[in-house]
Image (cartoon, rainbow, N blue to C red):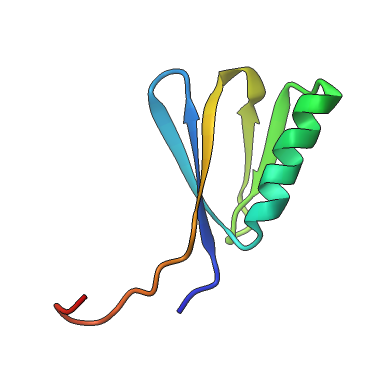
Amino acid sequence: MSDTHIVRIGVRSARELELEVDDPESVSDAFEKALSDGDTVLWITDVRGHRFGVILASVAFIEIERPTDRGVGFGK
């Protein structure tokens, strides 16, 4: 089972940016801090070390998904 989480960020253009991160709480904390500090860009680093800048004014929502246990075969 993987400990990574999926962070999905919806933007006003009805698109989503989906990132795999190790610490989803740091993403939500960074988002809240950026909003309260009046920042214009939120920077997120995914599990592969890629950095993404998201313009805060274009964020419609942030969804944090729990990791799922991906089984093998056709069973549930």
